[in-house]
Image (cartoon, rainbow, N blue to C red; front, top):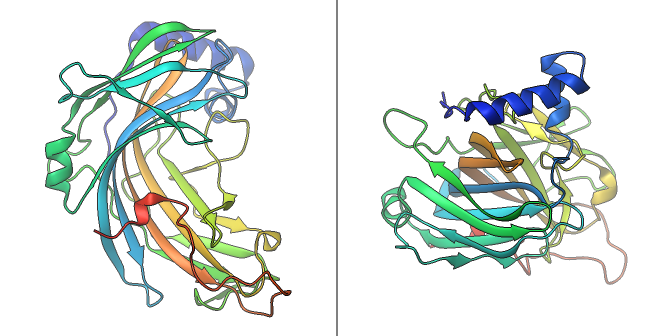
Length: 306
């Protein structure tokens, strides 16, 4: 089970005071607090740095490793800014690596590796220093410290296995009825845990992209005023309106173990995560010009085969 570093007491006291003054109970406060964007500043939603493994699930249910990867992201509030954003890693020797705007976050991606030891050699545990300049915060540096949450072995959780269900029955990935909601479930997130600091519990994400890499369904992220999933959730429903007949889609499920901190009123996550990708196909007859029978663009580069 993951162990999380203690937050500096002054930040913990501020967080608890904010939660407890707005809600009836600490438990309700934690749930509501992770729903709403930070209010003490209006630029950053949260920042995250992490190591992840990516996997492919076949239609027969076999799960195999694709690659290992390092990433860092800065998520912005609506209208938020983070100028001159960069990252220093334990091996960058003071060189600042710039973030790039992906359209939904500022991102920095390391290489992709065939094995976890290769990833660890390039991106070892230690301090990852975010620097950015935001109007409501100023020019600041914020440290996210990556440290294996397990005493021995890998810090990356076991890859999830994906299960599909429609109308109360298991359904094959290549025979999805586009007129019915699709219930997505997964193998147990056994490494997941509640956050003792009450910032946000270990997270779970379900994403579906279409054949052109456009994201058609997303289970949500914390602090964005929308529902989202944690380790305690067991399923996610993709509404039938997101599906079209005679189309292929890219589905992913991610389990993310977090170590949380709060500084400059910005939530920060150090994460060890794992994702499984599964291509699915809908039945039926498409309207002329709307069928798509092969993946033309991956919605996530984690699907790369090394």
